[in-house]
Every structure is written in structure tokens, then in C-alpha cells.
Amino acid sequence: MTFEDDVHAVVEALPSGEVVTYGEVAAEAGRPGAARAVGRIMALSDGALPWWRVVAANGRLVPGLEAEHRRRLAAEGATFTPNGHVAGMRSR
Image (cartoon, rainbow, N blue to C red; front, top):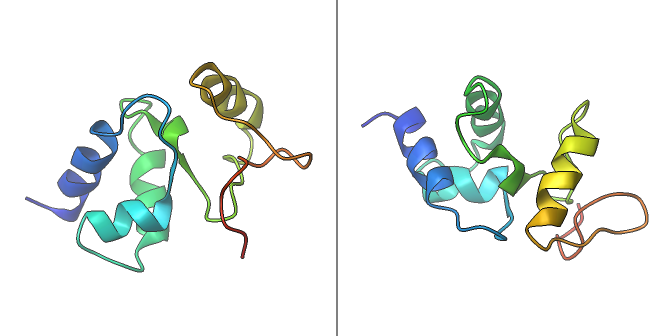
């Protein structure tokens, strides 16, 4: 399996309501530190993955898709900080 396959497997296995970071996906897929590569794979997945369950390490939503990202996460029970980030995420 390729790293891309591993990323797909990790993200596809995320249950409804779970929110993880790109870095956590990278680590679980076997490449700690490859958060940007995960972001690229997610961007190229054409919505085939539950992309809304993956956020930046500080809880920031996908630029340009913030409203849709927030809507999908809220439907699964996520809460948000006043600045629009997912609550409970560590900040860098």
C-alpha cells in the first residue's frame, strides 16, 4: 500500500463526530510530520473521503470551505471557538 492508500484508510475509518488533525492522520498512516502531504491527498480526493473530520492542528477549518466544513462538523456534534475554529483542538 502507498502512503495515499494509508491516508484514505485512516480517514475512511473515522467515526461520525471524531475530529483529528492532518498531523494525526499522517502519524497514523505511518509518516509523522507529513501533515501537508495529507492535506494535499485530501484536496485531491474530490470529496470521496469524510474530509470535514480533519482540521489543522489549531482547529482551523479548510480555507474557502469554512461554512460547509462548519456545517458538516456541527451536524456531527462539534463545537466551535469564537474565532470559528473547532473547540478543544490544541493551538500552535
